[in-house]
Image (tube, rainbow, N blue to C red; front, side):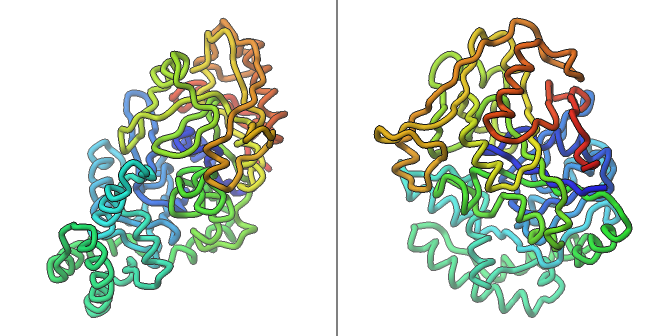
Amino acid sequence: MANVAVIGAQWGDEGKGKVVDWLASRADVVVRYQGGHNAGHTLVVGTETYKLALLPSGLVRGKLGVIGNGVVIDPEALLAEIARVRAQGLIVTPETLRIADNAVLILPMHGALDRAREEARGDRKIGTTGRGIGPAYEDKVARRAIRVCDLAEPETLDTKLDELLRHHNTLLASLGSPIFDKQTVLARLLELAPLVLQYAEPVWERLDTLRKEGKRILFEGAQAVMLDVDHGTYPYVTSSNTVAATAASGAGVGPHAVGFVLGIAKAYTTRVGSGPFPSELHDDIGKLLGERGQEFGTNTGRPRRCGWFDACMVRQAVKVGGIQGLVLTKLDILDGLPELRICTGYRINGTVVHHLPAAPGAQAAAEPNYEIMEGWSGSSRGARSWADLPAQAIKYVRRIEELVEAPVTLVSTSPERDDTIMVRDPFED
């Protein structure tokens, strides 16, 4: 039986939470391996809606959840999220949640610096959530980060805070922001230490044991390929690698353990924040997609920009992200539209290209080439088999398969977990 990795194939918010929740019924453990609490997954289970930011989605299914070393963790946000979902009836204990002891912590100065920098950018904002993810990753690669394991060593914390605050307070002062007092930060970390450490362990050991026992592991990605710090629309990206290859390094397993890679894409395209968006719609159709799809960020509440499906971009995500099968979500949002468009390439300064270029100027200049398709008058909402779909909706899905050069493995037709058409079970590959 294969393991499965789930990644976004657009700019995030593709509905990964529902897909991971649905797949978790077939898995034994669900692993978050990158990102922070800037990414949110919404899971609708009957009348209950769970909004997760750090916790692996498998916890909703009662499965073991693991937060890998590739995730940056705000301990305050983590404990608040645990308390919130417990109040909704979920069981989150050291038996159901494990956290990598070598994961990096997000501290208050990270968020303060994130927000101060964004404010200083003025009208050239990147669109960061201001939650400190970027500065925490900076500290990680600069080798001055405080990690979960450091919470068990007060002397280590004391020494590391000297270097950390020397760096951050200097930057904050230069931006006109308040600086942080070491003793206040240290005291709070020592309060949080026992609450966090009860979940901590070398999770790579546990995952190795589970793999040898033949357990099914589901790797849950955050954000999406086009937000990858290397392969996305830089600088309007996140601060981690979001491609499937990161599942190995971010969880502490070998690349052979990642298994089948599922890419999640909406039947149209959305993006939150700044950055290029060639197929964006500024008309009534764009507004309609936003209203029907309830396109607001799970954790930020920010409205998402909406546009036609960009097959050129998703094909690029398939190739660099390692995607072997595509999950198409929110097909029902397109119900009743008389005409649909699919972006198949871009015109950039008179030249037609079939990939989104790396240079920001060329990205901003990209204009879409569209293929026009007839829409469908029937309803796809709630469909659970091909027979339930309008014929033209099936044609639309098949055309997307051809253009992105990847088979559609699953189709989601509503937020409900069981309104899903499974073409093939990815765990069987």
